[in-house]
Image (cartoon, rainbow, N blue to C red; front, side, top):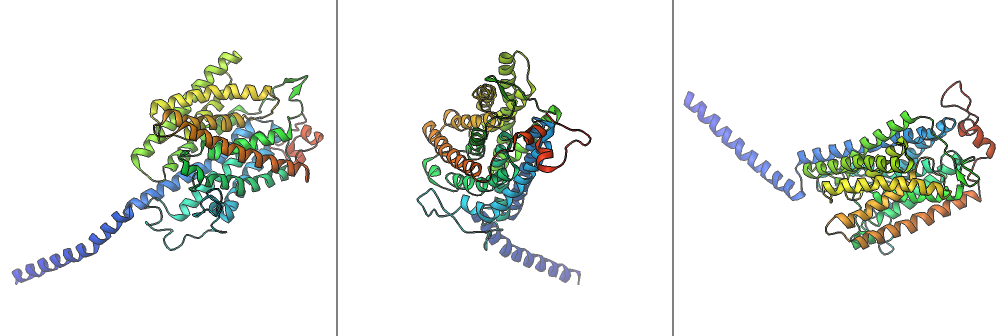
Length: 441
């Protein structure tokens, strides 16, 4: 009786093993063919979502940095713009931006394509088949959408303290919805620069320089703030909160781990780890470079220069964080830190009033970082990198100038002199950032 029972158990176990083999082996083969198991798919997708909320936190960093480096009487205005930008970026990217940036097929050569309005994951959009098990369609969209708003946020700081709120929001909508996305398709969407071999890992040019060119155009059209230049000489207009600016930089540094680490587009342990190290060390050497340069030139250690040095290193390494060595990353960051100090001083002397140094950080160092890929990374051409820089510069700068001039000659671009002296918080919003105080100069 006991023997028969044992035999029955053995038969059942054998049958179960056969059934499991029939079920699991094809599943394993399928997963291998598709590029990832269901478990790896989940891990990859989870990391991409973590990277997404790290990039989202960068918008708080921008808000803190910009408000800290500007006058207290304009703090509400700065915070309002940074809140509005993320909303505009997300919504426009959902309606048209995502499908402009990733059109699939290009209708006009390799320069322009459009996959239609709205979002549609299709039958395989949320399965292992979508991106070889790296992420779902929805994760792809939300991660890229966080990048989209960053370009306009860069412009926000450069034109701070004198631009009309409504005009800035209109500019943001057009620039993020169409200019950033069409330009982005040239590389990340498989356009003509991608075919040429142009390389920009996480956006030194595609995000930061595109934002920087828009910032430069805005500063030129707007002109300097009242009291910035007296008798042909630049007069410092100090920011109201260095602690707030410092918090902003550290939030941005934190977010950059998602910005660059997420751009691996999977949870590949070796590559994500390398990108974390190159990103962090470039920022550290950026601080050292800016510290040395500013201390030498200005004869005193300038905190604002050091803060921008950290960001300069981050922007500089963003184009090649996955393809340069750790030593090269430190050199790239160090040079970026020196460059940003010289750029801030030169731009100031040229009569271009950029309250937060956005042009120097994002445009100057974005260009440097993109060209550095051609210098420090084997297999990437310096000439091709230069062509990419020039193509993006021509398109983004001319488009931004056209939008700003159109706004200037229609609804107006700059607030009145009286409103500027009073502060945009009261003039544009009817409120103050710090209750009980009146900021009139």
